[in-house]
Image (cartoon, rainbow, N blue to C red; front, side):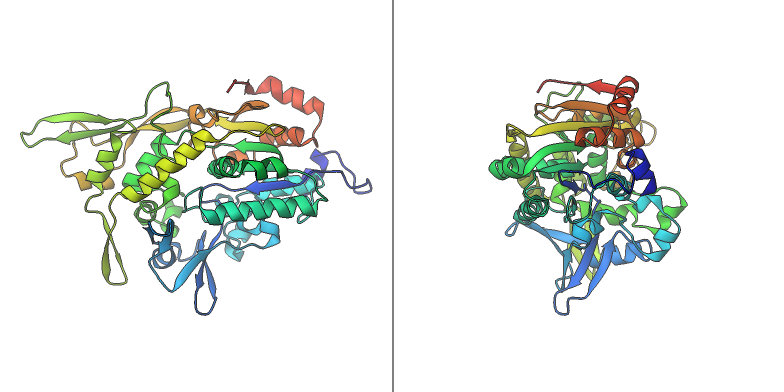
Length: 440
C-alpha cells in the first residue's frame, strides 16, 4: 500500500482525491468458488485450494451441462457452486487461496488482482466507495442470466456508492468477453453506468492453442513438483469438457486470421500408412467428437459419459453471434491492453511420424507439440487486439497473461487512463512500449 501511495505521489495529509469508481472483473479461473450444501448452507472452498485440491475438485466441482437450464451443474446434487461476495466483491478475486499456508508462503500463483488492488488503494481508491470487484462462476457461459444480473447490480452499487459517478471497468482475460456480452445485451444499461472500459488480455477471437488442447488433454495451471499438490491435468480436463466458457473461447472460424490455427494429428491408417491430418477451426469439431466419443469419468461409483458436448457448442455459437454484434456506446472510452513478447501456443500437433496416433482416444493422453505466435503465453496478440471497437488506445506490453495484473508498466498506463498518473511517466512509457492505434 505504501508503495502504491509513493507511486501516485500522494501524502496522507492531502485531501482525498476526487475519483470515479473502479470495478475489477476477473477472467477464467480468476474467482474463488465455494461448494455450498443445499440443506445446511455449509460452504467449502473448492477453487482455488492447495491442500487436498484434486480430491475436493473431483467431489465438489465435477459437473454436467444441463441444456434445459443452460447451466453447468455439479454431479453432487446436494451441493451448488457459489462465489463469495465479501469485501465489496473484491475478496473472491484478490488471493484465490486465502488460507494461512498460501499467504504465509506468499504463493504468487494464487495472487490474482491482489497487487492491482493494492496499487489502486495506494492511489486513493476506497473499497466500497470507489473500488469494487466482480467474481463469477467462470465455468458457465459468458452470457448467463445470473452473470448479467450480477454485473448490472454491481455497476448500480458502484454508481450509487460514489454519488452517481460513472464506473471505470478493468477486466482481465475472459472477463472481457463477459463485458462484451453485457454490452451487447444491455447496451442502454452499459451506457448509463460506464465511463471507461480498460480491457486486459482478452481473447476476443479465441485462444486457439490453449483452448483446443484444453478440450483434448486438459489444462495444467502449475508446472513442476508443485503440480502434484494441485488439481491434476486430467481432473481439470473432465471439468472443461462440460464448461460453456471454454467452448466460447475456441478460435473464431469467422475471423480473418493471418494464418488459420490448426490441430494436426499424425495418424496411422489400417494399411500402415502414416500421414499428418490438419483440422482448422471448423473441421476440428469432427476431431473433438471422434476423440472424446468414449470419454467418461467415475463419480460416486458410477460411470458418467463425457463426450464432446454439441449442446454446449450450439450455445457457444450463439454467444459468438452476440459478441460479434457488440457495439461500444457513444461516450464510453475503450482501452485495450494486451501481452506481447511471449511464445504463445497456436497450432497443436499430436503424435509424430515415428510415433503416430493409432486409437483416437490415445490423443487425449498425448502431449502436443506447439507452434507459437506472439502474445502473452496464453492469448495470441492477434486475437487480443482484434476487439472490433473504436479504441482510445491499444497497447502491447511485454508481460505474461497473469503477469499483466502486476506489471508496473501496466500500472502506469492504468493510472494515466484513470487520471491518477503523471504525464511524464506516460510519455516515458509511450517511448518504451509497442503502441498501436488500430481502427475498428
